[in-house]
Length: 369
Image (cartoon, rainbow, N blue to C red; front, side, top):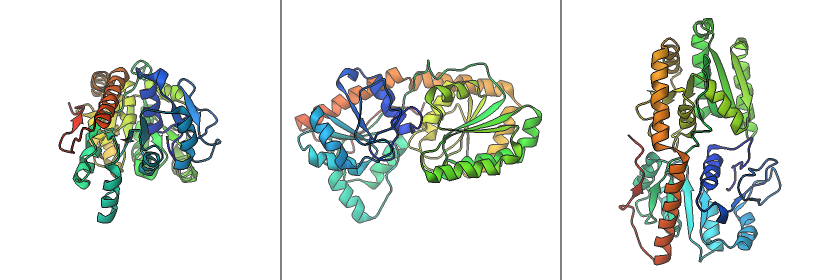
């Protein structure tokens, strides 16, 4: 788990949660170890080693000694390409797989050529969604490392519905490109009508740096005139987030950025919330036909969708039922973890046997039903 990750209970990103859940439910749990930057409240239900003091970012070099001591036969690096390249150099006989949670920037032709040379040393690349993988294949045609897709999975028993309240929820990073200001503007536009019906807005924000703290402060100021109907909470642990989602009737995932997948969306769907989301990146892969999909950067469309759902309980319940059924069918962590373990073994087998598979031979798990 390289830089900008927070492998802990209070500040975990979607990447941290994905890695944690795959490890926790892996059939190889007893033989794996997570290496991450230090945190005050590291996850304690799997084998984790901190490579830095709490609050210090782990540079690629920080992983060398603890990895050498562990002696792994396979290494998975989440998200950070340069860390993967450094580990390949440091451990030339060990297969290294890159697990990507979003798109690569297109970059210049020279950078793509440079990255292509390096990525062909990988044992494989795992993507969380088809959109990110397809975008990569279009822009990095020379990469011959096998490219596979395994979506996020969640524990549907933990992420489960509870009796619903008239509440709208946003769960995610306190960043402008997540569309949270669009949601705030939408609430301001329709708050008078929604408040008369007893509706409330809950922003559950992950704040991990000064920029995100500034965003959270701006949101508080922006919505200060509606303190009776708006709550803003930061850095809740997973059980608290689960409780908030379980009682929410509507969840909004208004991302502007092209998301690699949409973990927040499937968490909300599993908890029985009707989901409003944009078509940015791989969000459609998570929601499918079960959500209300709108354009990004459109507070007006968010407001219209909120009013439509707030006024139509049968529609909310129909969407909630379809969403949870979709998660149970496609994104149950037990199914996903088994697929992930199988993919890792397949990539490892290909690497040690010298099998050369090109980008044209793409393994993937269909999630667009």
